[in-house]
Length: 244
Length: 232
Image 1 (cartoon, rainbow over the protein chains, first blue to last red):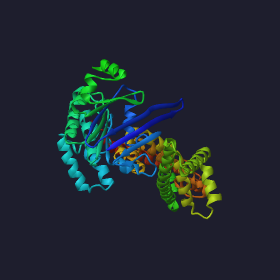
Image 2: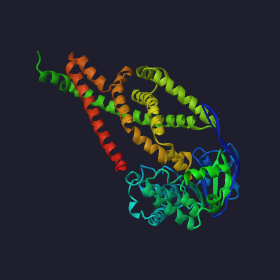
Image 3: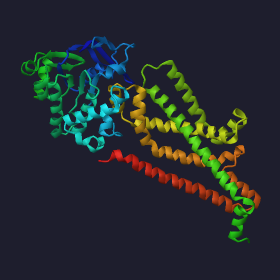
Image 4: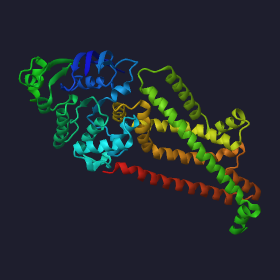
């Protein structure tokens, strides 16, 4: 589905250059669920954001669906339309109703007619138990509801893959479960997923593989059982001892 | 001493002088309305150029040229008096133009420069996450701007744009410099004919005041309607 080769990312600012990613190689296969964990500042979010080119890699290659996508000739918008993304801060459009949030992109990009998109939106909203909120504005909803709608908004484009960037980190604790449940269902249906998260229970339950990222590299790549019970890399051992 | 009613009769009724006021008001409204439209269009374009230029890491030649033009535009317009701009437009650049058309263009260009900063701050007040959300769905930069960023930016800057509207309305009172009979000039003509300055000028001032109060009320209604999506 997606493979990343020798990915480097350097940010430039007034203080100079900051190399956040220092050579990442990874592959996520069709239907696989990969959880990316690591301390804050490790580069895990940047890694995820490079996959749909919200960040432009400084060096290296990203291949999606058999095509190298970090190439000037590639239409980035078409690639992104096939990859859903869910953000920590939900990023729903506050000036639109829930239904408008969901149907905007499919209709604008002519993937569906307005009626088809409305239908799809209602079906998806039903699935996440929010069909009665279609005419509400995001500001009227709880964080958990907003994040479920953000997931629906991404799914409305029928993506081949979903990226989650700390989807539960901005939520009140009692709302984390409802969002994780939607993600679990999605995983069971066979969606290809890359999830940056601090929810270790979710990683254990859902992931096929765990990437442990720190210092801008994948330090350990393992099955969740092996990773949580028998971590190999000293940095991973240290990290797990602090959070578990 | 003449009575107030006699003064009023002389200033507005005798010789149909009220027409100086109504025709003047018509010109003032026309100039203000069309200049505002030009100003908003120019302001939005200039703001988008500025924002895009500031954000892009790889700056294309076209964008660099556009940014240079916008920078010169803002510097020239904001660095010179409006009345001088109007006179240059009328006596130098567009000599053959109808005075009202010249005034519309001149005030529009002037307003655009001030609105550019307003819109720029409005666009930047919309969080980066909104743009990323739009782009992550596959929308282009332009589509994201048009459908997601600009509507929110307009909402955030509506009060500031209305202030510019009000400023513009009052600023058009210098149109008399290029021979346009606007509201102010109309009152002034009556003054010159009746040798009574008080009555026509107070009326002119009162008309500006009423329009400004009316516009302020409209702004309140607009803000209330916008506030629907802010309900919690």
